[in-house]
Image 1 (tube, one colour):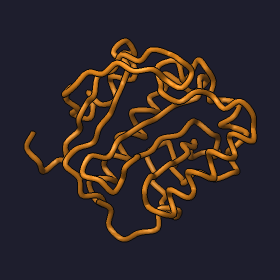
Image 2 (tube, rainbow, N blue to C red):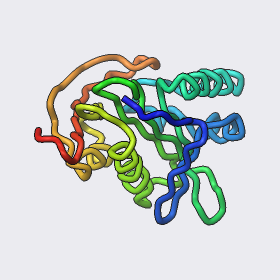
Image 3 (spheres, rainbow, N blue to C red):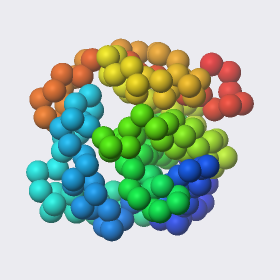
Length: 182
């Protein structure tokens, strides 16, 4: 559960990055960068057109206002260049979920780990939860490193289909609060 705060005003800084609430200012970036290559191991599929991207952003903004989800853009601090998005869904439950994606041209720079670690640190300060859920494809080794480097533990396995019909064979990692025994 979240403490009383306005999720639309959250700003989280890392050494190199700024995590800011999603806005329509990033619709073009998201539309161009959230590709089938990026979503290969993910449930969502790329947006078919820019209007669908705007619809997604409006839906996320409503969820931000209602404190249901926290969706942030990842920007390079030095020039505000768009890197990707990350967030927490089911934020007001005892088992919120984490997600992230980084645009292709910014991958392999440590941005995922840096931004996710800071988001988890922020959550330890402001959220009350039993654990985070972090589903990730078994074969996506780079993405599996994120929960593993944040003390995530594999607790379940699941097979499902993504929106684009892609088969998902996932581990469910759980990341526990720092002060909680597993």
